[in-house]
Image (cartoon, rainbow, N blue to C red):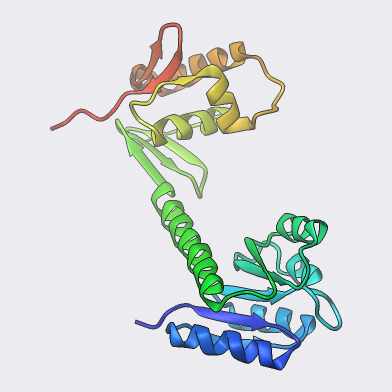
Length: 230
């Protein structure tokens, strides 16, 4: 089975060749680009599994390449000749996944590439597993954003949907109201813990007989009951 396809972007031919040589020895398929414009065109055309991207490029630089490819689901490992925190931070904020500074060891580069690709595979698997959640006869389709209980389609608010999906994804685990807020809204979301009680009450009502699957743990919070062993 062929390994992943990697696009190497650097304006220096000797560096492109060095990186390509070491990655090909590891079994990776390689394409190269020598400018920012060529990098964007190649990425959109070839859809590589990862891009090794030098920040200092003629034409549009590496940061602009990151911006242009933002949201394309192509991991980017930035390569920079200077340990400039501002460039690194900007690159990461634009969607790059990791960085390495020149000069670098080929072994370290390969290790970083493996880490990024492993993270991508894990996230893809998690997305596939999370696409449909099914517990106690409650079916959640996260892609279509639908919920049904025993085949009956339910109408939930966005917050109710997020809370139910979070609890069903973690059956048996007890979560405080604060943890539930953070999981579905973020750590700085300005809502009271009382609002969680209101949302849970509405969820139980809409789930009817299935509402009892959301258990109150006195003094702590809530949990979704685990499936009974058959």
